[in-house]
Image (cartoon, rainbow, N blue to C red; front, side):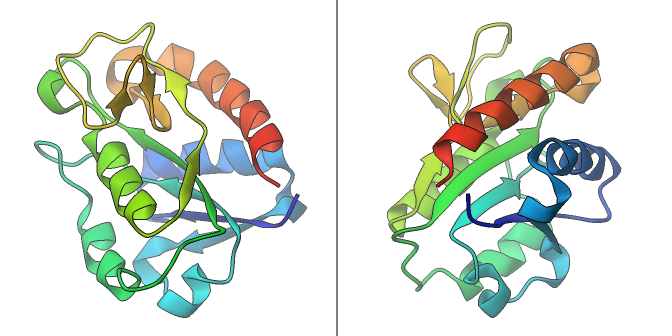
Length: 168
């Protein structure tokens, strides 16, 4: 497996905690952690395998740091690159746009030739709609620390095991 670029905000406590668990499960030597708030186009393009942390903000929006970064790679081809996405959402408080950020990011990556892996079942979640949903799956790992914190560790563990098979 090639080295994985793990892009997340170092300033987001919950997202950072989740990233640390993933990094440990994948093996520290297999992952390079990158603060997306300081990321450059050059650093982003260095990898073949990625894990991107994409929490959903407000009413189904990307965090500001992703909004500010994505224009730097919007003209680049992502063909041959594999992406796994995870992010937090609140299925009770924001049921009509639960983990939309993951779906927005998946659409962006796929439109540029990137391959998205790490789909997970929507079973066990209760929400009205999500841009991250395709059939009975999310296009990544949906974490709800607000309402289902007790399920997060197992979800992360199972997802990372799946990624070990899907990353090359």
